[in-house]
Image (cartoon, helix red, strand yellow):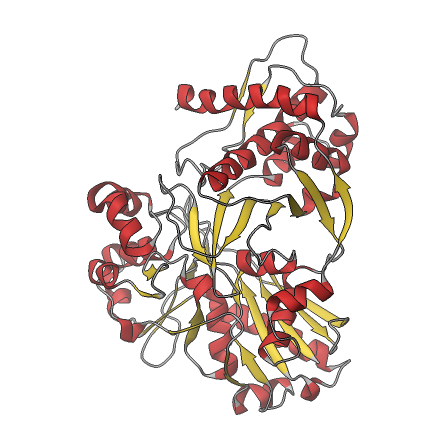
Length: 480
């Protein structure tokens, strides 16, 4: 058997699968999100570990956990976990969606300069990244900064607790802004700028590398065998891509989750010209381009529940996917990452008049989200990526109307996939490859992942949306 651990922002899910990748059992546990000040977002790593251990024990009540051959991980990215010399957590983890580092990012992008950051790391500074968090810690909590012996990312803390090995993988490291993505090493200029050393950083692995085995201490607590291999796994976006089979050049996936993602693998490194897109290492050891929207399906949920006092499903039933007009919606409800990298961007309806009904406004919200994804898609294409179709995941992908609107706006064939068990199952795939059950991620994906429904763009609608997309881009610039 193989065990996958998906460490999310609100909960952890563990998935247990057999040698053929078939799910045998699963367990999940929630943990709190702490918001001590406006714009701050924290969690306690000790509570992550307690939740993981609780899930392993739940599985152990039903399954023989000593039969697990390998365990791997998928984790929320960018979060800052710091330990002291005695391996105690120094302070709560600062998460990916924490916005306290606006000043640090402005300094990095404007004073240090985007060109230098792109040269040193392959990316520019975003508030979610790890390096600005360390800079904030150094300035505002110098006593805590001085105690740091180990700097970790969220999933790597769990891997460390289970194996005793201090490691990380290239897909997760790519989102720190102190990792040189092109040259696969820690960025010496960034380490000097922050004031940290390589001695405080983990060993660098590929996502399917075996970093060790289950420690005697964890085996005693969990019922797992000390011969079980520990595979380091990857950041949630790279692992999510594996879950859609998006591992080779010419493939692409789009996520219509709370946030939105457009993701395309590439064989060679190529930095974003404006820094608005991410260029990271992929779980298969190559590279990928990625655009991230902060509010995708989250904007639709906000509209349905907070403004209209309804449900997303009811509002979607009212929408006519064949109809569009001049009403525009900017989906920047939490600022925006890609491609504009503007933490102060705001949402807006533009073009309202008395003829507009609730269904028209709902349609404009859907279109605005899809235009934001198209903005990422067009930037990725300009960087050299291409695909004949894209696989789509996330809650929004369950709606036929939303899928059709997105297909019409992108001008691209879209497909749903045949798996719905999320990153926990994909972490299982990483464990299987790491243990030799499959020779590569590509081989595993080819066997385990396929398509169900297909959506094709309607030519006339695509032409109309191209004109409306131009107005969408102009609107942000006018309202900025």
